[in-house]
Length: 413
Image 1 (cartoon, helix red, strand yellow):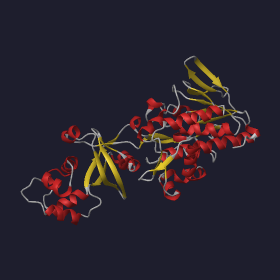
Image 2 (tube, rainbow, N blue to C red):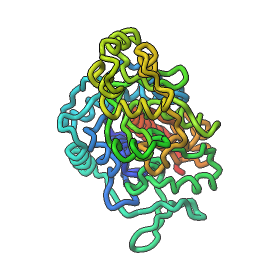
Image 3 (cartoon, one colour):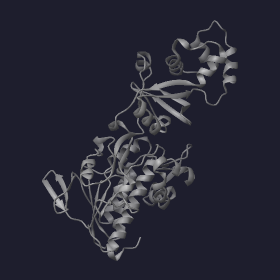
């Protein structure tokens, strides 16, 4: 990418060393800016490395039209940003760092190394080559009376005055990895319009019996279909001591969270055998001897696991029928009442943050000209499956391009 004369050696501060911040730093440095990345933790990319423990799902291979719908209410504002840096561009970027990728059976895209550390090492090496300076243990405190950025460091407080600032401080999930949401009060005090931070892609609470809580916590419900309202999701859910989590639950987390917020609870329905019709299940159950226990009938006829049988009992209690047709219907629709959502500190990601109405098309804050915002600080959310990282990278790219356009006008903050 060619150096922009107007940006050459202009000092830019990027606050936050996650995917959005590091992508912005790369774009800015490639165009000639003198970039310094500040991060409150002892090292950058900690949440990125955590994501790599599950294989590092970078993005998804589905067509861009359905891809964009995954962002729900934020799709209209995110669409042009993701289209400007689509999944194909993210894959090309990773492979440009020597990290080949592959598409899994679910359509998700992973690096062949199936972890984040090789990609992060190569990326940081590229940033060093570009002259990007990374300063860790720098906890951003806001601005001083003269508009300089204030940082708390092990050596005391320091202040810097770059020509532009890009904030990529993340949400408030997994705060021990660096994203504490502490920026909320700073930006609110500066007049920035914010939506409350809320957990996204988090587990939900179920008032399990002792049997389920003690015997089955940590076991998965595989190949189920979960329905809430008009939305039906195929996938896997994990039973925990608190309730349920996992990909199929995360895909419904936004409407479930909102329903619990409005009504105090939410009922979902689990189809334990989504590939079979109720009539097929009933026929198989009817072949089993009537004198057998219910558990044996379910195990022999439908290969149901002890967990599935106990979930069925948990939901229907004494009303669980023995008649094959009625029992088949019960298996096709297991009601579970969710009574709460796990706290934001245990969520995979965060909803809420800086409202899109608070930034312009370049992601610059209207209340603080010269300050740009990227990543999970913005008010959007998405399910797991590659959509989170894709939007983080894309907004980092978009905000960096916004900085460059501002520098080309000769304006400094």
